[in-house]
Image 1 (cartoon, rainbow, N blue to C red):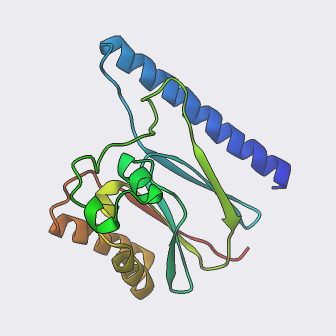
Image 2: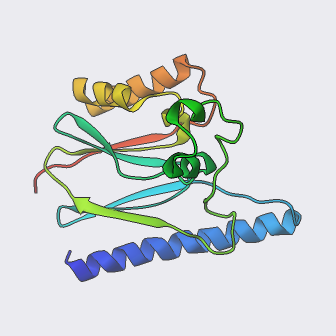
Length: 182
């Protein structure tokens, strides 16, 4: 897959998400003027040892490489904007009354705004796609420790078990993907 085909792949994913957005937005508006239907989304695509990620909301993509966990996405949440601007400190965010307010998601606005991140893939990279049901109860260093200490199947089971042990106050979904040399 060349660069042009990769760009076409990204455009196709954008189109599919935009169509889903239009349908959810239409259905929400049909219920009432005050109703929205929405879902966060994170998409991982790969071609020619490169990856791309499109997202809206607070579902996340992480890359675990050589023992280090890196967050690829930035949450589209009201609280994240406050953190980024320096108005709020991380220690204050956890208990802020608007900590769960999403600023972007599929279906909540007529036009879907997606962010894009791209990068190189190395052999052995592990990508973690997850909802806030995981990241809301698991810290990044805990996820890194689990990913670095066991197989992918066992890591997924351990992350789910940890979330359930902590009460799983929100939906929890995760996908783990390991890259391999061609």
